[in-house]
Image (cartoon, rainbow over all chains, first blue to last red):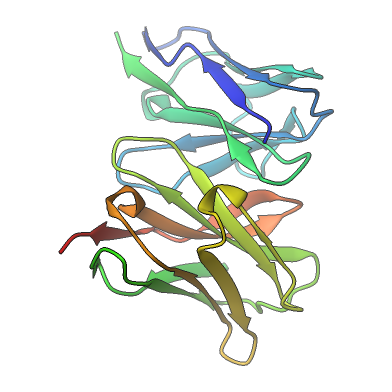
Length: 107
Length: 118
């Protein structure tokens, strides 16, 4: 199975900060990477698919980049509603796998 | 707007079978191009894909579950189900159902907590 390693596992940031989260795959996954946001007690929400395509309704302050094995989710200006846990997911091959998550907290 | 809703027992005894159903509303489970998936999340931990099913009945499973899992679909009832047998405490988790679009998960149910305990 392809392993996804996210870093950092948690971070503290202030409103308005630029935040970046990294996801590294154990082998190349082409562009088959998605990002999700999960708030406490809620189901995850799809933010980005195919590395950089924004899901409908997702604010443009979210962006994704990368290729091969290294990928990044960036929030250009952190808003109060962005404090959550973020997961990457690969879908190049079964079993589908998720990264361990990055918790974004208020500084 | 398509909605998914999980249902089933919240408490299962060790060694027994966990059975959950996901009811799909405001849309057809036979819609072309979509798989239907189960994903779980142990308390305080990350997400684990359990498996996916297509309207035809074609399935994919996570081998980490060592053959304990079966996912089925009932197109006439617009729902799909998961059975996980020989459960243990490690199977305690929130279980989510989701629509799978090109193997990403674009619509999720709210999740249901299942505790494995005697």
